[in-house]
Image (cartoon, rainbow, N blue to C red):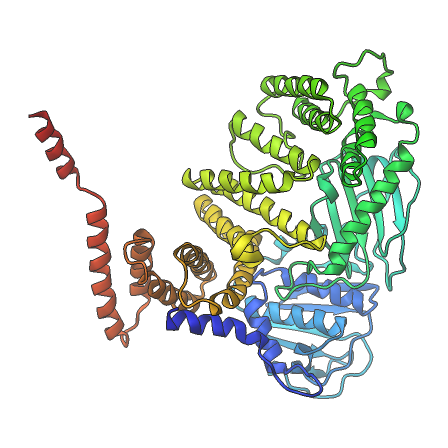
Length: 639
């Protein structure tokens, strides 16, 4: 392992060094250093943390105003007592932590100074983060000044409207109150109430003729559940301190919209995402169980159940299969087959027929029914259903937007054969007990094919799916099957594919860049333990490591962090020395960029880079025969 790489990994691992014995404390400087390393560079993130802080303080209203190059934040809640800014960094209480995240993100990305004024307009804490006077109860004003760049703050309104739609505190942004969340129109709705929150969000209100369904509550959360959405909203939105954190719908159910809040949820050090702790995983499991019981009540009389339940009964089939109740799954499949009108000899009323499934979804169901029939030893029925599924798939509209039995389809053009392959994999994962292992193998092969074709949006989709499979295995108490790379490297593959995809599209700096940075930082930190157990880095692992470093270099360059990019380039080039005949194109790119970054005092390094550049260019020339040589060989063969 190279010295530069060792130093880099030691630096990342230093965040977990032992600090003291006896009573454990958090050093303010160390806490701030951890935030520096892992806090997101998303420029609008501090506004979300401010809304969280206002809600944690019990505020009824909060205001954000911009005047004379100063952004003023205020709320009418109870402020925490602290003697200096520095005491916030090590704060273990939610209010202090939310304010610390807000301040650090604002001063790292947007502003150089922050001041706190009391209700009497006295300066409580100054720009040097030192106390001027003891804080007293009242409505303080946090003033952020000396902006680092010109920012059009009005552009952040849409983000605040979407993410703070259910905030208990009314948010006034630039002298205009944010719009409240629109009513939700759906076929059915219900409220699961299983716990008491310190402060409940503003829950979404149903509109229209949606039917209120039975409530089933056994779990430690509160949720509004909407089934059969009539607009584009779908997925699970977890509300933490009045701010929404969207994630995929349970079991990938379509047209399902859930707003959920619970206690004991926390953010990771990036400040952007919820930590997928055991508590969070348990919440999803509780929600899936409650939905299972919920649908049980709805399908007591299958013949009279409305056809809009068909997509959700697909999930119920999975529950029956996990319980080894093949007979129950088979009976539900027979009912669904009647509703979708595939081979049904029974006349149904119009309201009983399904009007929401397209041909791709029908084919996916038929293929699933075929697999379940084979599990029930019905070989002839399974073969017949499988043939029906293939026929429907072959005749389906190739441009149908809802073609995959998962929540989110991949971005990018796919041929019919590729769509069929992904659809089959999704059905097998949901149906067969050993389907997950086959799906892993096929997805890894498919990701490699897409990689060879330079189709990075599809490589990213495959690796995200693989990460979901491993996280699902981990949440159920099993061991993730990511192999020797471990979960950290699985996350790295997602981060690498994200950066390659963003570079391929020439995407400007946005949320995806910051999310990729979090994945890669986690991977590089987790890499150290694996390398410490080895004398040398295996060649297949060296490729992954160089990919991680390459992606991080591009993130640093996109953020204008040239010093960090230079350091990572030096590590990359030193690691590439162990495999001088490989990664030549990337080596040439990094050598040229590093050479441009050198200053007048780097003459020795300049000489080394020139020598290395010549060697890399010569190696590239030898690996690519010239056109003249090709013509010469051609004419010699002709004679």
